[in-house]
Amino acid sequence: MKRFFFAATPFALIFLLFSGGCATDAPQGRREQTELSTEVYSRAGMFAQVLEFLHANYADADAATRERLFEGAINGMASCLDPYSGYEAPKEFDRNQSQRTGTHAGIGVQCVKENDQPPVIIAVTPDSPAARAGLRPGVRILQIDGGKTEKHSLAQCMEKLRGNVGSSLLLQLAFPDVAAPVTVELKRELIRRPSVPPTTAQLLPGGVGFIRIESFNEHTPQEFDDAFRKLKAEGMTHGLIIDLRNNPGGLVDAARKIVSRFLPESTPLFIVRHRRPPEPQTIRADGNDDEKELKLPLVILVNPYTASAAELFAGALQDHRRATLVGMRSFGKGTLLRVLPLPDGGALRYASGHYLTPNGRVIEQNGLEPDLEVLLPAEKTARLVNEPPAPGDDSQLDAALKLFEPHIENPAAPAMKKNQNTPLRENIPQAVPDASSSSNSPEDAAASTVEQ
Image (cartoon, rainbow, N blue to C red; front, side, top):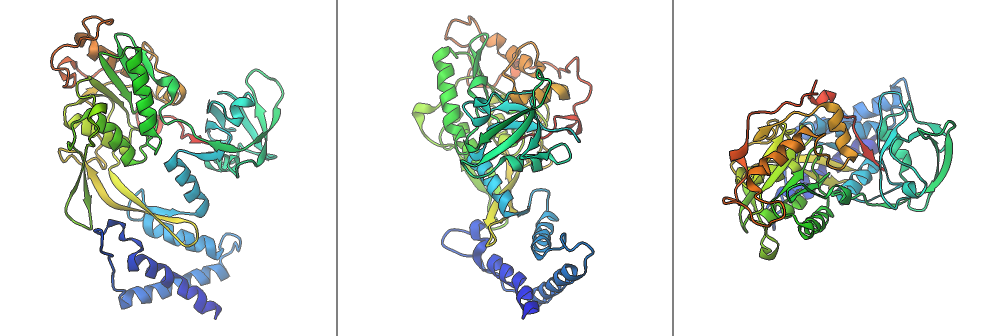
């Protein structure tokens, strides 16, 4: 009976997947079903035998648990197809869901980590447990609940900062200006780090606004609108720079809502090619005429870490000649991912289609080429995570500002020159290298960041 139980487990999963669990790509009102062939049954039985054999005979019994083997099998099956598909274990699924919604339970810090060094805080969410305890950028987290951090990965360290709302954790910290380590006790709270940080929304010289979008989640459209209205009230009359550098993407629908502000209703924004149905689907701009900004000149900053929904955002405005892209070629991720929750509390993440720009450009593996290429060294790219715009110290931002100069007759006046509803391409010079740039490859860029 024991052998039969585990042999049946893969059949249960296969039945779930092929009897409609993956029907999110199917037309509404119809559920896709696939007949299971004799070959599928035979191979599923072989898989169960291999799983049981490894569980019973592998040298390290703790490593070869049935749970780990089964999760690894699902992950391997999906991840062999493309770089983005895979299995999300229950904890990972919960963490990713938090990122998709923009909220999570933690203490309110964002960190980076280098090799065997303790993680260092690079950003603190205002009015969070970390902020109220005096934590600030530059502080290193030496221990979490008595466990040292230097030998663990960044993801492992940050996972320990998570927990239930109201639960406590003990941190040992190294402050740059304090000789001895400091121990503090914090309680986890529901944290929502803005995807449009209010501190980065600034009015720059010449009546040009600046807004940074760090990612796209369900709160991003409202945060963007709040920042946009603030800048208009302060005198943003001659243009807007939208900073998408280091933006890994997120919810495509959030990107669609913001792009719709700058293009007429029903304008094509993205094209989606599915396997089922095979006909391409065109995503179009919303209405809301009162919120449209069809004439304000736009510049978008991009770099090799502008990806996914951020590339769709930039590509739509570039194709319609509504914005000028400045910076470096973007990452090149145009895969439509869907998430299928599984009975174990985890989820299957799989590619169900590919996105194209309105003009049919393929983003996957190609990225977007900026209208004006301006290089930025890796160390400055890393600092973009937690710094407000700094004209004079950011060659890409400086190049973007320069594009507006012919359009600004008087910084105090609201008037703009003709052709104000087209991008600033006529002002574009040759590619501009940063004088201090030594290497701009993705491998030399900032360490990955995790927010808790």
